[in-house]
Amino acid sequence: MRQFVVVGHEAPTTPEFSLDDLPGSGRLDVLCRCVVAGCLLSHSIRSAVRVHLVLDDAFTITVDSDEVRNLRPDERSTAALLRTALEHREEAIGHQPVQSSPGVTIRRTGLEHAIDTLAEEGTLVVLDEDGTPVDEHPPPSDPVFVLSDHLSFSDAERALLADRATATVSLGPEPLHADQAITVAHAALDTAGFDHGSP
Amino acid sequence: MRQFVVVGHEAPTTPEFSLDDLPGSGRLDVLCRCVVAGCLLSHSIRSAVRVHLVLDDAFTITVDSDEVRNLRPDERSTAALLRTALEHREEAIGHQPVQSSPGVTIRRTGLEHAIDTLAEEGTLVVLDEDGTPVDEHPPPSDPVFVLSDHLSFSDAERALLADRATATVSLGPEPLHADQAITVAHAALDTAGFDHGSP
Image (cartoon, rainbow over all chains, first blue to last red):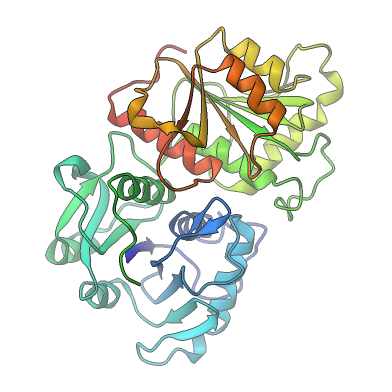
């Protein structure tokens, strides 16, 4: 299983946003591209991938590549899936997930709870341009990559991640968009011969 | 200079398409993501990159990273730049380019003329999932990568490219979207220490 946690610092937590202005909707365009980069290949879908979008530290939407339906590569249709998830946010009680559509769930958790749960399922690795070069850190089995959206991690997030993560890794000399980083991480694992592991 | 030629088999050749339905507009969403993957980094723009979009073998729109303005990472705003280029298509006479906005030009050329011109500026390399693995083909200086959109190359295109290109290379074991392939190609060149060369 490959997992990606994307911290959406200004992401909307209600469904009242415009599909015509995703950048103006807390940069939801970034998060949509992360879902697509995480789950989709050309004409197929990766197996055993989960993308977790942490929205303003209040809700987390998870897209499971083995279960999701109607996920297409464009930003607008992906944003519509996320909007449907947000329409179900009131049903999310405690930390229990609510399924809004096949393979898409929403739960009332911020970053700390999300990564504490995921740390039990794999190896937490932060992807950040300030990290150590990826070739010094061979990819772990069952990685849980944590990335930030268009904004840098806050000091509190850095402290939390420093405490929980195994490593902070940079994928190359250039500062990549979050979705580009997901694409490069997948490609590195693919080329290294890692399969997606067990679901 | 790194250049990318993306063959848009069903791409629109007039500006009468809907920004609300880019997938339904000849998969213009794919071409928009290719422009962004080619030109943009997180909070910056790559130097010395050109992305050429061949539209239905009739027009070619070129985005020059050193000149373009108002290029943002989302599909919709990128599509608006392309629509503006198509609004100027009638001004494109012969093979002469017309600038529609800073760093964006349109010319009346299909794939053959486009790659014949570009072959003089760099080394033509086809990116295709059926190619030989990239680690057997170290990246050339001044690469001109040729990719297809969501459709495979036609037999005629394959014959043309086989005649003109130095190599057909696969970037990994999984079939990538065109924009993902551009991201991975850039990352491989970045990590190998290649700069973008001279403009």
